[in-house]
Image 1 (spheres, one colour):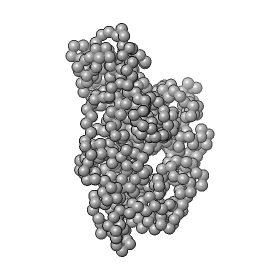
Image 2 (cartoon, rainbow, N blue to C red):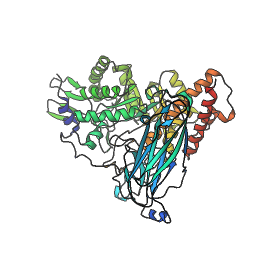
Image 3 (cartoon, rainbow, N blue to C red):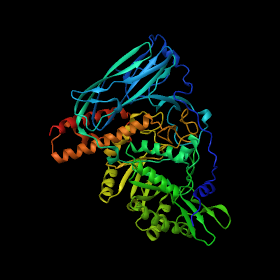
Amino acid sequence: MKKSFLYLILAIAGMSCTPSARQSAQPFDEPDDPDTLAVRTWQGATGRVHAAFGSTDIRYERSKPPTKDLSVSWQGTAWRGERVATQVVVWSSVALPSVTVGCTPLQGDSSEITGEAIALHPLGYVLADTGFTGCRRRSQDTMKAMLSPEILYDNRPFPLAARSVRPVWLSIRVPSTAPAGIYHGSVVISTGEDSLYLPLTLRVQEMTLPPPSDWHFHLDLWQNPFAVARYHGVALWSQEHWDLIRKYLHLLASAGQKCITTSIIDKPWGGQTYDPFGAMIGFVRNHDGTWDYDYSVFDQYVETAMEEGITEQISCYTMVPWGNRFRYYDEDSAATVTLEARPGSAEYEAFWEPFLQDFIAHLKEKGWYERTAIALDERGEEDTRHLIAFLHRSAPGLKLTLAGGYYPSVIREIYDFSYYFWHLDREKTPLLAAGRRSEGKITTWYVACNVPHPNDFTFSPPAEATLQGWITAALGLDGFLRWAYNSWPEDVMHDSRFRTWPSGDTYFVYPGPYSSVRFEKLREGIQDYTKIAILQERIREKDRNIPDSLDLRKFLEQLDPRKIRDASLYTREGRKILSGLTDLLSGD
């Protein structure tokens, strides 16, 4: 007998049927700049509107005239199928009621890259921490803050306040069918009274980058559909909620995401996020002691993610939660019951064994068994060993993932293992990853709140997100994990700071959905990783002698992730090597 899952999920998670009030955040409705002294930097500034190309590796401050890496023209290089970006920085010492930024099609000798492939995104500013603060609870009222350009809004005219700056993210998605060659176009900035023209040139190379669905980079950003319901003010698992979930999954798939995050129990991480994770599976203990399980939400979430292109892995959190507490609905008491049981105990196994039998049968019926894994997050070695022993007896063959410590006693049992940053070893990690890969296993790495560099905070240098792709390649790893794709703080469109961790630690994208500078730069690094793999394979196939200046292997071997402090210097130099290798190998 199946129970109503809406009833179960509300009973188990303690949620209300009434959604929270819808947040109101319009584009460019931004906080005041905490830097009240910035106005002094405009002394002597003249003219109405100014614009220049800037670097995507720089966060241009809203209240100071830009000075770094500016140019009146832009030259870029890309493969077919690649997405490349630059920033157009607009500023004025006087108020301008409406500024419009556009771009002409890019004209080649025999073809063009049309406007459909060119996207412009005025950036929105949010409050961010002024620097690294580590993993500790703090009062938001006492946090020092700055404004950080973060949100990629859809292109629209925007007002420009007196003595202010507005960066505009410009991305070009090169069609996979575009002929190689030189393409020219212009960015046009108009205020109604003034117009500025900035020329850009794009050189398209001979090689082709496959679509994100074919990238081998194992990207695992954990999704939080419960945050989507709260922020947008819609009922949990309503049709409106599912329509929104689909949009966020579509954006995530565009970066090559491989894993579907499912919460099979209530609060697998306790209540550490602003929006706790509820259960996607209903557990009911019947009067006769048997169990019923409702998979309706789990199934719909997995199916929606797969329809959007995320198909490789279903990660199920978790059988070893923080606190080892499990909630279910008990028919005898007509109430929600909380069981506290550690792996290895009789109570634990009595709770999980009937579920595993039922769950595995369900997964096989859906055709998902081979891609499903029970997922663990930073669990201790003893609990992990007890879980593995239990699975060997009750569910042999069911895969396991673990993000956390490297435990020699269990590592062979873990299908998808993610190294914590501080456990990476420049010499040993590549060897371990290669051995695991030969066994059909996956090895990735992750950063968290106590890693100052490289990281993905809203104050981190943007190139650090790109560097994560290069670190993955340099250490011979298969991908990268980050614990939160969209676990937002309360008022994320204005304030990225959170009560416990450095700002931005809990999310990559913004409600809308809108992408972020960090998400775009992470995607850029994944593209670089994919290009590295293609070029290395081409070198092996052609058995070419490579000049020292283009020795990619040596360049990667010199990368020590703990010693890099200026990610932009490394990634820029790396891209020069990739471009030179592409030209060298394309002629063969």
